[in-house]
Image (cartoon, rainbow, N blue to C red; front, side, top):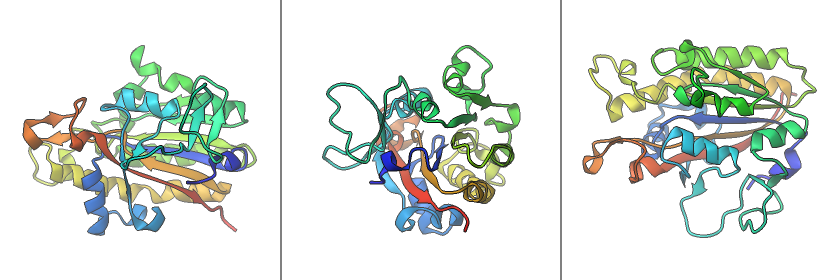
Length: 268
């Protein structure tokens, strides 16, 4: 586990959630060479299999921001990367960044970070009171239709905005950047030529599209200095397995997600 406690204050932090990405699709896409950007960044060139704390976007991200990232898919008490201080916690260790705050975003802000949310799916669109809850945790949040699930170039648009903002911020001001990638969430059929409906194949094609858009984001982070990067899915989704379709349900296709954490070095 990364010593996150030792990095707070000296490293930017990226939390990139690949909304709705299934573990098996991420694993197989990596093995087939379809996601070379991520393949060149993931520790050991592989995804870690984990279990999500929530079966849909709102529940999973509420848990993430409370310090409960996806849990390793193996028995045992697994120390967490970051956590909020409360009595009786059994999953904090010497390397856990522990905040005396109501949420992780506020914790990073109290540590001097500028917090930025680049929204994606509807729970981050700020169009309704519910859609303003999670973005409201951040000092700065942005969403526009071009970032949402109906725009086939959503990830490119999100990355372009994030890169521009990173370049504007002073290099000596640490940043906690959260980016919720919407492209893999349904509808994703437009990433597979000729597809009339969403399938696991169009889900995989959406991931391939996302991977092609990420290099400028990591280049922008490197230009600012070292970063702690967390890239994961919030939940998966079912495409007919055992009769199930969609998510917000208890099925391995939903609760098993890909996860990775690493320190991205700065330039020079």
